[in-house]
Length: 299
Image (cartoon, rainbow, N blue to C red; front, side):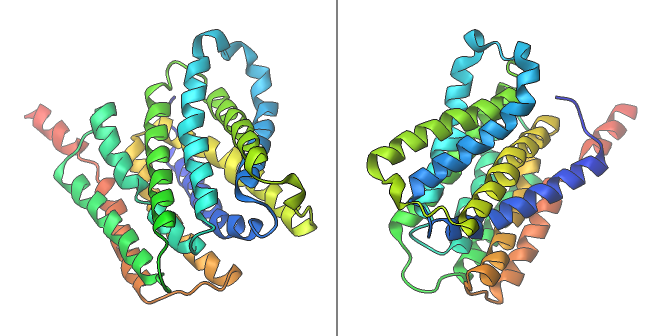
């Protein structure tokens, strides 16, 4: 994928951080109307069908016989692991706290990109990733309002690992598959799988098809999932995946603020400290060291 302008990058990042931040309390609210696996399956399948409208004109770039296994692997990591574990896990702890734990993903992503994508790992970047993790840790510690579910923590960490590995996989295979088809098919495949599993363990009659649930479901499916994933992989494909990942540290902050308004989850002063760590993290991870290399070449 080609580079995109700085202005467009900022706008895409702002959109992504906001919609993915508000996704957490909205998903928590939706679980009062629907069992978790069925909700995860429906929202991802709908998101995939929305993108299918845009992908079909590019059917020649699908090359399904050559690339089908890429879509299945991506669906397993980015949808089945990430969304499946996260949707179930939201039933075990507050949405803000759960999202904060999931967002150790940028730290994992920085390590995975160094190992498998050959992205640079210099001192400031390491410090930045550590600070980002520390910021998320401070924020999550401020959300502790009682006993923390071990199951919830395990599901959050599993969700983060799936997302981190999935992002690296998509980046690594970006020159072999069409990006729009990759996002579309991973959502459809993952959505069908989660819906089938949900049908085996949950009851469709348990879903309350009320106006609040339907509007919530449509917003998440269209903006959070369809356009959110498309935006994320557009950004990942246009630059270093770990740098894009560093900005996602801001998402749990938005999730906790939104959760406090929508779900009345508690906010503490530690959020301010966590935010400062996160801001410093993003600055350090995104410092451009190229000018120093240019000077060295001139001399």
